[in-house]
Image 1 (cartoon, helix red, strand yellow):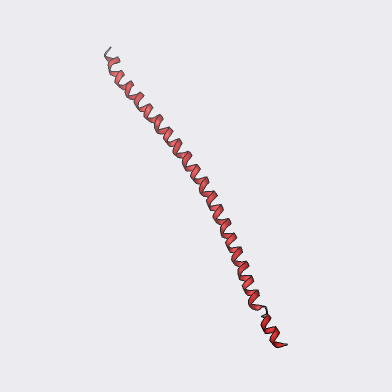
Image 2 (spheres, helix red, strand yellow):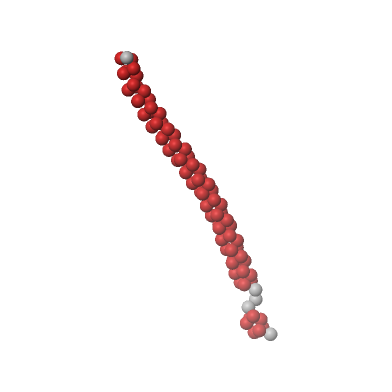
Amino acid sequence: MSDDLHLNPLHARLVELETAFGFQQKLVDDLNSAVLDQARSLQQLEKQVRALQEHVAARQSAVQYKAKSAAEAPDDAEEDMSE
């Protein structure tokens, strides 16, 4: 019977540790899911930033092309004066 009294606190402690481990395992799983969700969100945001950068670069090229074309094109007023 003395062995039963001695094992009882050990058994209670084991149950307590197993319960704590179960909670920790759930926490780790939840954190892992959160990290994966954040990684997906980050990848999506990076993709959107790249698309915006490409869009801005294309717009800047178009503006520069128009500005260069306008600078190279003869002015209507100058053409009228030369005639």
